[in-house]
Amino acid sequence: MKKIEALCATCNLGRIKGTIQQVSGGLLHTMYHVCTEQGEYAIKWLNPDIMKRPDAMQNMINSEQIAHKFLGVVPLIAAKSFGGRHVIESGGDCYLIYDWLEGRSIFVPEITEYHCTQIGRILGQIHSANAEVRGVMPNTEARGMYDWDAYLNLAGNQQAECYHTLKQNLDRIKQIDETIVKYQQEILQNQVISHRDLDPKNVMWNQGQAYLIDWEAAGYVNPFQELLEVLNYWIADKEGNYQRKHFDALLCAYMENCKISGVNWEAVMACSFDGMLGWLEYNVKRALGLEGSKKEDCIEGNKQAEATIEELKKYELQISLLMQWIKDAIKGL
Image (cartoon, rainbow, N blue to C red; front, side):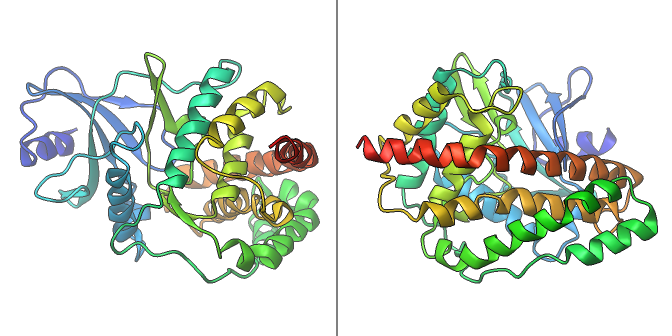
């Protein structure tokens, strides 16, 4: 913990009081709760392996610029600035420092219509803001398919834990990927700056108020693609079944600021798999040692890869229902 002490000294946060506590929940980085003479802070130690990537530092800088752009627009927690910088380098490592928020994330079965209403309203406020951030540009180039066959072969050679699950579902994964690539260029024509990862774990609740945290994925996104992803995060029960009242609450609140008519929902539905597929590809690479350098990366990669494949399968079962509900909502306008 000497590195945290040195960081606090560098940033003039005051002398540390009590024990530095690691906070659970982070999948990629490590968070600490630190109390000093001046206040309480959440200090995020950024994964060194991730920060070695060529674009990692600029992406992290951009994400915090985006978060600060939405201060006053929606409730959120953004990193503190020190000398005009949000990403702090100290002792060879990189950190983000936040004021500590006493709160917690809420998951099923605790999620109610009230929570869905807040999330829908916040998402609509973000999408309708038409925010622009210097240096942050939309991606207008559609990606190609991921090389799933190569990953499967390597997983077999390494006898990776995720091999059998990947093999059993490979054909469908490739079909989903092909459909994404087919519609992606159309989806890229309509983009806004947004959070892009409004999973319940990235929302802290304090006295009934939602605060968005972890803006690392922030950037340009098709708003309706993100809407579907957010619906999938918030309206499913513990069995993965969608709850109509939660759907209605979230969508009605979203429509306070954004219209949903005149949209090619078939294209949006197809591309709504893209985030999960990208997360799957990243974790397959972690499982195979192509990302990360620690044993824990391999273990977590296998775990997350298998879990993501199950999520893809569940989402497929529900997508036709979600499409019908959206059509119903449009007819009712």
